[in-house]
View 1 (spheres, rainbow, N blue to C red):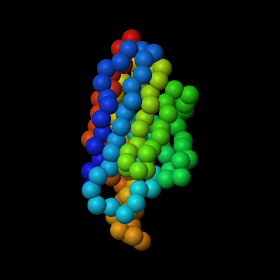
View 2: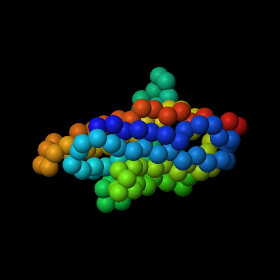
View 3: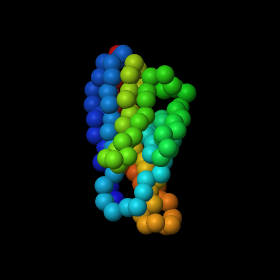
View 4: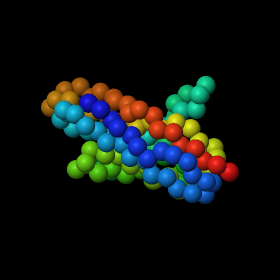
Length: 120
């Protein structure tokens, strides 16, 4: 199982970026999917999460600016980031809770980080 993240890069303050993360490999189902971010020396923090049914929750710092969504037909989660701020600069990681086989245990998988840099 692999989670492949893409879409990071450089944006100006007030601008937008869209991150994508696709799950591939052999698995039975995907439960929740999420985006986290981590600045060196700090704990990884949840940015946004989405359940298999589409329920979402966001960190207070990104509410109203970021939107998480998923396409279950493509096993992909997205993070639309608008009104970006310099403090959003860091490495973003996608996460997915997968069930490898029917009735199997749910396991958490991580994608590689993708860098987001917001200039002032």
